[in-house]
Image 1: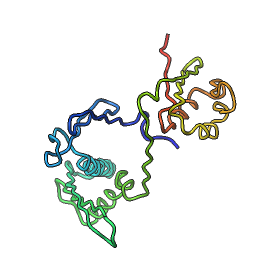
Image 2 (image 1 turned 30 degrees about the horizontal axis):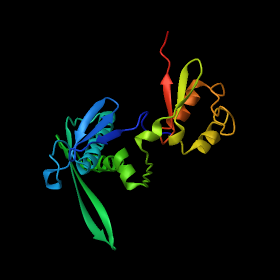
Image 3 (image 1 turned 90 degrees about the horizontal axis):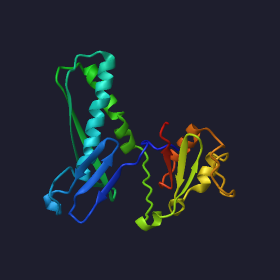
Image 4 (image 1 turned 180 degrees about the horizontal axis):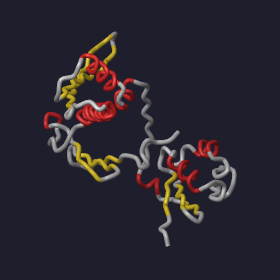
Amino acid sequence: MKYKFEHPIISRIGTEKYKCTVEWRHGKFITDEPETSGGKDLGPDPYTLLVSSVATCTITTLRMYIDRKGWDIPRISASVNMYFEEKDGQKVTVIDRDLDFSTPVTDEQREHLIQIAKACPISKILEGGIRIRTFAYSENEEKEKHTYTNDEITVAWKPELCRHAARCATQLPQVFNSQAKPWVNMDGATSQEIKEQVARCPTGALSLEVKPKA
């Protein structure tokens, strides 16, 4: 297992209804709920973010394909919306996606473009199998921290957050051994291998500190 992101997306909310701050790799943005739901509409709501991910992933994937083909289509737009329906007693989400191209396309091109849109990564995620795993912690659980170091990197371990030590011991046993003291042997593998294993930690129990160059 390897996470998509080097660092997780972090969302925080205080007491202001229902403003959230989302931290991503290059900054922050605000999300909110519409006024009809008690928010102030200061930013996109979660449904808007979901639909936006479909729209932007679609047109980005199409742009890559069109550029590779060398077709003269300067602009692409995607109008995306969603609704819910009951089917066989279950709630089904339907996402409609309308594509608009700035220049005429042939029937053959249109069919190819539709198939490419359906194959965009976000579409494949939403139409494939999804599992959402949830772990819950409080801030006071993060007090204890142990560090292990070699000549290049330092690994920090927070035992209170650790739920998957056996996974580390299985995936990189020459470094992680829950029966040994200390249980992390920084000389057991290359720094790159250790970095990759730390990145797989799903709970934040393991983190990486890169030493500054002298």
